[in-house]
Structures are given as structure tokens and as C-alpha cells.
Image (cartoon, rainbow, N blue to C red):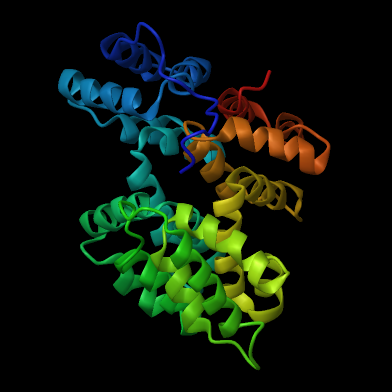
Length: 319
């Protein structure tokens, strides 16, 4: 999302998919599994490199790397290793599908995935979702969400921002005024205006709109959202605002809630660490320490154990 993000994971030098594939096969063949070898290889390769290893595995051995890993591993260790081997789009689509299947909907997961990403990233997910489930993402979401929240998510996945459109200062002033008039400037709130502007405009344009909002209102857009919106819509629009202004802080807060709450939300912890490792996990680590006065590594160490802990720490870049 942010071109200036600091990843914790970069392409391995002198990468050889055949050597890695053979080493993984050896780690899983016969009696017992060499978990450390699996961790050492998969946490030190980018997703593109892991895809090459998976293709070699199929070509050379006629086997599916993910299926082999699933048959050898278990628990959260299996979850994080399998997440690493899936393509980023397939992994996040499976997370979206899981959030909507069965009794109840996990709105927090939908918000985290769809409201934190640029339009081109969301469109990649829309394409992958239909390939995986033979069903449009928007259609599935419509059956699982409601009201203004459903409308916002639908706008994000069906129309989205035009990333090629240049930022426009004059338009930003007009849009800031429109947002003010739809919220703080009237009795009641016109949620449709918030939805339309926040779903349609690029993050760069939104950044300008939020700056202008302060000039128009004398208050920040965050203050307006806190006072004018409620429920899932408030969380979703608040997420867009945070990810426009400081995505690393948003993900640090999500990780803290996943780790510090009653019981660990392992799924969220795995999803953020895996999906941000090549994007901005370095920045998220810094924000985590700034906000909570402890390192992300120490927080993870306190919640996890064994091979699962070793895998997460390797991705975070911890000892």
C-alpha cells in the first residue's frame, strides 16, 4: 500500500527452487518431520520464491506442497506455514470466505482486509475470490452484511478508486466541505456521502481531503467520524482514515488487540504478520513499540510457543 513501507522479508539471494524443494521433501519424508528445516526455508523466501518452490514440488514429485505440509504439521504452526505457501490473494480470499461462512460474520476481518488496501489490491482479491468460489465477492458480502456498512463494502469491491486519476486540490476542498455538510454541519448524518467519497477516492486524494477537512471544520476527520457514525460503518471508515494516514499504526493496534485480549486471536496475528512481512512489517514493529512500550517480538514470545513461535519470530525478524 505505502510505497515507502519497510518489509522484514526480502528475496533470498542465490535462490534455488530445486534445492529448496528437495530440502522440504527430505524434511517431510520418512519417520518424523524436520520442522526447523521447513521454518528456515519458508520464512526466508518471498512469496514469489515460495510459489517457484511449490511449482518445482509439483513438477518434480507430482505432489502438492500445501497438502504435504498439512499432512505433516498441525495446529497454529500448520496455519502459519500454509499461509506462507498460498499466494497472497488466495490466502486473503480464504480469510474473507471464512469470515462470512457459518453462523455469524466476522466484520472485523472484512474491514481489516478490504478497508486497508488500495483499489488495485482489492480488485486482485475480487478476481481471486470468484476464481476460488465461483461466486462474486460482492454478492457473498451482500448476504452477510447490512445497511450503510454493506453499502460501503459493496462500493469498495465493485467501483473503487481510480488510481490513475491525479490528486486534485480544488476537488479535495469541495469534498471536505461535502463531508462536513453531511456530518458535523447538519442535524443527523448523511452516511451515503461518507461512503461515496471514502470508497471512490484514492488514498492520495483522501489524504488531501482530510487535510482540507481540518481547515473547513477546525476538527480532524477522526473526531467527526467518532461523533457522527456508529457500529461497523464507524469502524470501517475509521480504518480507511487510519490506513490513509498511518497504516503501520493501524496494524500495530490490530496486533495488540489480537495479542493482549482475553485469549490470543491467532488468526488475526498470523494474517497480519504473514501478509505485511513483504510490505511494511518493519514499520509496524516500530509503531508497536512506540504505542505499547514493548517490542512486538516480546509480545509474540509471551503468547506463542514451539515451532509456531519460531516461525512468527523469524518473519518479524526477531531473535
